[in-house]
Image 1 (cartoon, rainbow, N blue to C red):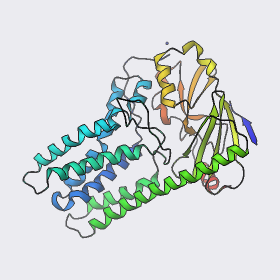
Image 2: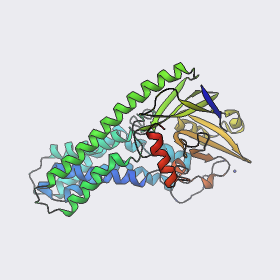
Image 3: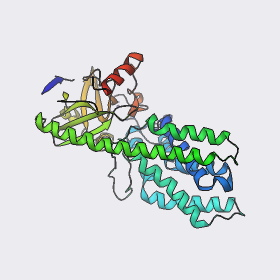
Image 4: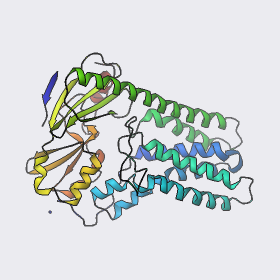
Length: 358
């Protein structure tokens, strides 16, 4: 087994909102919804159907407005919380259907068809969001448990590009063009196929990693695997217990044992702050996958679920999600603050080589 060594509190004052949404993530929902709108009523409503689909697909992300009045730990939990729940789904679907049905009168689309369309579009949003590592509150407000399958990166171009290209084509094409059907069918089919591909990869990686941890005698009570940035062939692995966590990377092309890096949890550093509500929210958000470090005179809370900056090249590197406990004003866009720090052409080639198993 190869192991290397890795090494006022919350501000409630008003600050400019900082959304946890990824630009690419938002574009993905818009494009996906536009294709679904075209499939539903493109021939009857023209390009207005695409607009309805895009709006409905983006509706659950209205929670970004919470950043106007919530502190960062609360906003982290609010995002993909109630507006991604089944209760919100059941409340908002008939509202969309009622508004659209009345706005487009006279028409030959039954109210039940509107319900099925908007229900399908909104459900697909909260279902797909569960595939990445942020987690969604399907059962809010009755349960705070967040569902996350950890099967696809939050902004994966191999999932998003098909509907993006198709949406652009559908906007440019004449509404009576015979090729419109081909565009939305192909795009939705490829995106769905990639989602299935990601699920298969998830099962394979979990199976391999479970066996390797047993063979390499990695002590753990909890673990997870999640894709490294922008693809689905290289996976980030975290396993450990209350004492600390081992991290490593596993490619679909890898053979043999994994290399692990150990990070002590050092939760004793939080003892003076243990009863603070903001800290408890960070711990809850992390699902227990966190470590604490001291950078100079500053305590830093790391949420391990969001991976590392260039971890496949620098296994002891910093985690993308790091929260400065004593400098709350510096915690804007905390989820992905360090995600692409230091990326360049060499980094990209390094990622591609690691995917190939090198």
